[in-house]
Image (tube, rainbow, N blue to C red; front, side, top):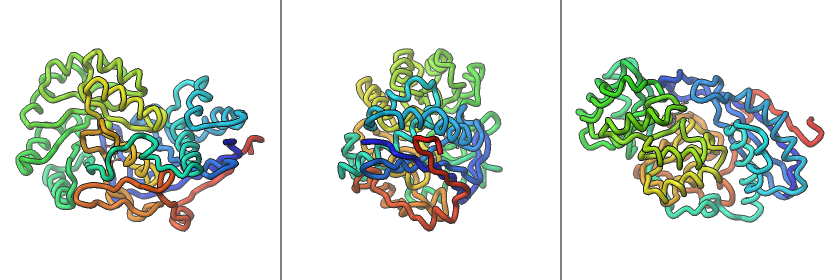
Length: 370
Ligand code: SMG
Ligand code: MG
C-alpha cells in the first residue's frame, strides 16, 4: 500500500457534562481526526490528545505539528507501507505516541478495509460484546456524585470508576460504597498523590475496590512498588505504561498488578496488543482505558477490549455518556455491554453531516507537504 495523502481535520465537540479530574476539566473536546488516503482504501484515525498537556505531555496542536512536519513525511517517503511497519518507520522520532497512534490507526483501518477484515478479528478478539464501565469525574459535593453514579447504575453500567484527588477521596468513596454495596468500583488519581500519602491511601482498603489507578507520578515506578506493598487494594498503572517494555518492567518491579491499556498512550493498537500479550503472559489482568473518544476511537477500543486478557470492564461507555451527537452511528448500551463492530477495519461509518457541523479546520497534506 502507498500512502498518498492525509487529511487532518479538527473538530470541536461539547461533552454532555464537564469532566473534571485531578489533571483539569474538559468541557469541549478539540479533536484531530485523520483520513489516510492510500492507493487502495481510505482509513480513519482519531488523535486522543487533549487541548492542553495536562494528562500527559502531548497535546492536540503538538500532535498536528509533529504529524505534518515529522511523521507524515517519513511515511510518504516509504515506497510501500503496511500498518505493522508504521511504528518502525517512525521510530527515529522519539516519543509522540498519541500522534503516532493516530496515523497508525488510520493506516490500519485502510489496510483492513482493503482486506475486508474487521479490526477485532485482526487483533485476536474472542468476544462479541464487551462490558461497559463508566468513569465519573470529581464532583462539587457527595450528593451530586451519588446522583451521577445512581444514574449510570440505572443505565446498566457494569463498573464505576471514581476520580479521586487529595481532599476528594475517602469520603466520596465511602458514600458510594455505602449506597452501592455490590457495585464493581475502582478509583483513579491521575498521579495526584505522593508516597508520603501511603497511610492515607490505605484507608481506601476498607471499600473493596477493584483497584487504585495511577496514584503517583508517571516516572515513579519504584514508589508505586513501595506503595503497592502497603496497600491491600491492587495498584493499576495508566500514565506510567507507555509500551509493552514499560509494562514488563513495571510488572517485574511489583509496581502494579493490573494494567490500563490505552492504545493512544502506547503508540497504537498494535503496541496495545503487545501490552496485552505481556500482561496475559504474566497473569496480570488488563482493561481498556478511554480518552473520551468519538465513535471512531470507541470502535477501536471496543475491538481491543474483546481480547482474552481484558478480564475487567473498561472505560468504554456508550456514545451518549460523552456526546449528544456522535460522529459515527452511536454506541448503545445493551444489558451493560457494547457490541464489537463486525465490519471491515474499524467497522463504523462516519456521519459526514455531523462531522461538517463540528469541523473547525481541515487540510490535506501530501508528499509535497501541502
Ligand atoms: O473515555 O470514559 C472515558 C474517560 C476515561 O477517566 C478516563 N480517562 O486517566 O483514565 C484516565 C482518564 C484520562 C482522560 S482525562 C481527559
Ligand atoms: Mg487513568
